[in-house]
Image 1 (spheres, rainbow over the protein chains, first blue to last red):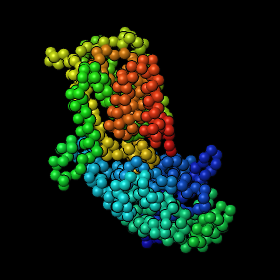
Image 2: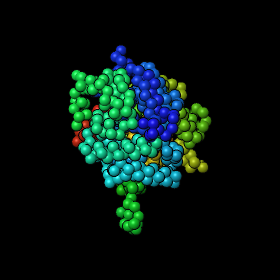
Image 3: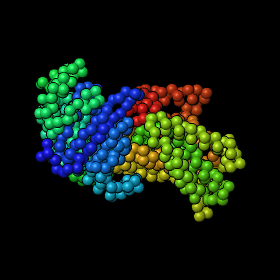
Image 4: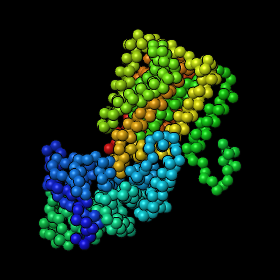
Amino acid sequence: MTATRTSNAAALEVDGVGISFGGIRALDGVSFRAHPGEVFSIIGPNGAGKTTLFNIVSGLYRPTSGRVRIAGQEATGLAPARLARRGLSRTFQNLQIFFRMTAVENVMVGRHMAEKTGFFADLLALPSVGRQNRATRAAALALLDRVGLADLADQPAGALPYGALKRLEIARALATEPKVLLLDEPAAGCNAVETEEIDQLIHAVAEGGVAVVLVEHDMKLVMKISSRILVLVQGKPLVVGTPAEVRADPRVIEAYLGSHGETEAARADR
Amino acid sequence: MTDAAATSPPSRRTWSPRLVSLVFVTVVVAVLPLVFPSNYYLRVASLVWTSGLAVVGLNLLMGLAGQVSLGHAAFLGIGAYAVAIGPTHLGVPPIPSALAGIALSALVAWIVGKPIFRLKGYYLAVATLGFGLLLALVLTSESAWTGGPDGMPVERVELFGWRVTGALTWYWITGVALIIGVALALNLEASPTGRALRALHDSEVAASVVGVDAARLKLTAFVVAAVYAATSGALLALMNGFVTPDTASFMHSVEFVTMVVIGGMGSVVGALVGAAILVALPQALTVLQEYETAVLGLLIMVFMIFLRQGIVPGLIGLFRGMRR
C-alpha cells in the first residue's frame, strides 16, 4: 500500500463523517484517506451507506458531522461545481448521462473548466470559439479512445448500450483532469470482458497519480485492484485494510453472511 | 442554398446544421415580400418576426437550459414601454430609449434571477409568474406614466429627418433583427456556453460534478432571454405606434411558452415555426368568427398530441427542475 503512495498528503481525507435523514443515522463516524495513485474501495451490504458517503464527499449532501478535505484543504459541504474546481469528480451508480447529446459531446462538457472562451466571444462566434471547440473535441475524442468508445463518438448517447454509458461517464469525469475520482459501481451491469476493460482503465487512471475511490459490488474486481478497502455496515465503518486483511476478517464475513448480505456474499464467491 | 453547396469543393466540410438554419431563415425573410400580395401580409409577417425574436430568446432559456419563465412578456413590456415613456415623458429619443429599455430589462432579469436560480424546480416558474403579474399591474395602474389600461401612443422613429414608417420598411427592420437574433442564438448553441446549457437540461447533477456552475449559467440564459424579449417589445411598440398593458400580460407570456413548446424546444427554427403558427393562424382563422379561439385551441392540442408526443407530458414536467 505504501508503495503506491506518491506523496504523503492524502488527496482525499474524510474525517468522522456522519449524516442523519429525519432522525435516522444513515452514516456515522466514517473516516478514511485516499492517496494519489491508489485505488481505495468502499464495500458493504446494500443500504450500508456507500452511495450516501459518495454524495457527501461530492457535495450533493452536506454532512451533519465530520469534515472532508481535498489535498489538505477544507472542502466540507462545498457545492459540486466548486469541488470539481478543487479536482474532485465522480460517476453515478444510476447513470447521469446527457442523453440528448452525442457521446463525444458528453465528454466535451467534461472539459468545461478547461474552456477559456467568454460569454460574448461565444455569442459572436469569434474565431477563438472555433479553436476552443476543436481543442475540446480533440481532447474528448482522446478520452473516448482511452475508454474504448472512439467508434461511437458521434452516436447519440441515448442510443448507447449500458456498458458503454458506464465508460462514457468515466471518460467525462476524466475530462475534468481530477485528482480524486469517485467511481460509483463502474462495473455494474457489465459483462466479463467489459469488467476486465474497466479494471485496466481504473488501474491506468490510478497509475497516473489520481486517487480513485471506488464503490463496487463485484468482489473479484474490488479484491483485485484495490490498495485498501473500507467495509461499511449499516452506516458504520467496520474495517479498513488491504484486500487480504479484509477477506480474512471474521467480522466482514459475518456482515456479509448476515441477513443483509447473502447476495453480496454469493457475488464474492463467484 | 443548394447551388452554393454544390459549387463548394467536395473536400470541404458539409454545411453545419447551424449554417443551414441561418440560411433558411434568411432566405425565408428575403423571399416572402416577393410573393406577398398585400401590405397586410407584410404586417402579419413583421409581427411573426418580432414575436419570433422573443421566442428565439426564450428558447435559449427553455429549450437549451430547460428552465421555464411564465412572466416573459414582462420583459417585452419593459422594452415596449421604454420606447413609449422615454420620448413622451423624459424627452429621450426613441432609439436611446429602446437601448435603455433593453439594458433595464437585462438588469431587472439579473436582479430577479439572482436569488431564484439558487433554488430548483418550480420556483423559477412561480417567481417569474409573480414578477410578470406585478409588472402588468404596474403598467395598468400607473396611468400618469403609462396611460393605464388604454395604453399610450409611441412616437415615430426619425432618422436624419426620415420618418421610419410603412409596412415594407418595418418588415425589413424586424426581419433583419430576427436574422441577427437567430445568428446569435445559433452561435451560442454551438459554443462552450451552449454545450453547458444543454448539459444542464439533461442532468444538472452530472453537469455540476464536471464544474458547470448551474446557477450562474441559468442566470446568463435568463438575462439573454430578457434582452431578446425587450428588443422584441421595443420593435413591436415602434412598429405599431402604440403600446398597451396586454403586451406584458400573463396571457402573452403563456403564448410565448406555447410558441416554444409547439415549435419544438431547443430548435431555433422550431421557435420561429411556433411563433408563426400562433401569430399567423389566428389571422387565418378570423373567418371562423366566434369559433376562432376554440379552433385555435383544438389545433394546438392536435399539434401537441401528434407532432410533439415525446415532449409534452405537461408544461413544467418537461423541464429540468422536475426530474432529479
